[in-house]
Length: 468
Image (cartoon, rainbow, N blue to C red; front, side, top):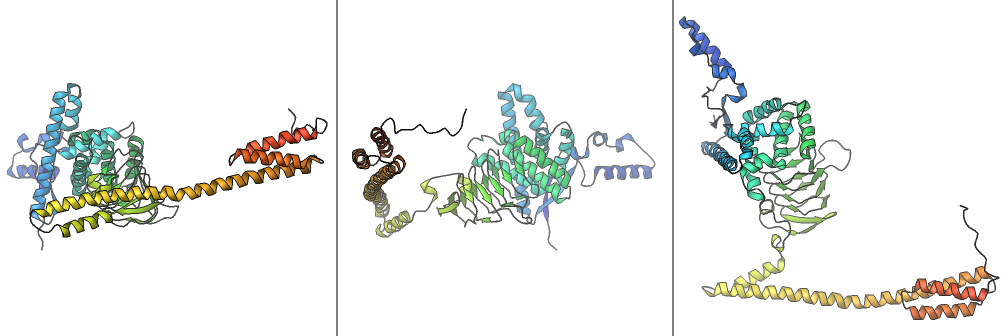
């Protein structure tokens, strides 16, 4: 039989037993009644005056390894202590916000209480009171270790990857992308408990407040950064792996009205740029990168960059794009020329102290060679465009002559006995003078000469198509 280890999460300064507070109170009353005395000291009046979700301690089985359980508990405690320290410093520097910081962070004894309080106040309205939402949120955070662990991982991801995030407390208090992800996690836990009506209500409220629409049934991993968050839409059967970074206006949607598994599956360490759209039940490989504004309709292999509409493979990606948050750079790809140059430099370096010098010289030669290739490529492109431009000019001139001849023919047909040769010669003269771009001038010249040949008595005013 395997042994499972857990860590204790204390939700208040009151030392509570592992059993339910009401059960412990009943047991104490029974013991007192058996002893023949009933005293006020046997009743925990503090517990009677405080709701259950604010007073109990709970042992949570997190993992099968004692060291992992202790590490998780210590990491959570360290992060919570850092949040409280930052909130104290902010309250000292901004006295106007001291009451807000105290009510949101400093008045609570645990991360779960603070997060539940912040989310409840952000999502509350006239019919969903903050106290009711707080009890729901804290109940999920207290009893579901996966939601708590994911919330801690997400706040660490905000601090690590977003250069605008200067502290953990700022992410907890102000970042609506973080708030939206945590609301979806709680709604997903309720969905799994078959509380689907409440889960859908939270989805609707989250869409109104944060402008983020994530279905409660969507499965989202840990360490997810929802940067900015505005306009993000994630469908019902979508799956997002661990350590994924998603920017604003990203859509993970279906391709029609089909039911069943119809949304994308995003692997670990994926970076999805702003305004990217991924449609259909396709897989985005681990470590892949979706460039901003891309429309992805086909699976993306692991560690590859795709861009465009529809998206096409650009090249392989080095490292972890979700962590580096580098949206476009030549360094994110592995150019074959650079790889070959590095291998040649390593082979020609020899040994000892001359190895570094040989590598640097080879790198410089490779860089200059690449520049020469780019310059020669531009020259070749310009040389190849010259005959095309000449052909285009000839075609334009031929088109002008053809339009002039057609105009002359039409005037001869409509005008009866016009001086066709004179008009034709005038048109050709204008065509030869105007070059390739005088189609409109040729028509005007033909009309003028035709009017002279026809005379005033021959010109008739055309009948209007409609009367005003």
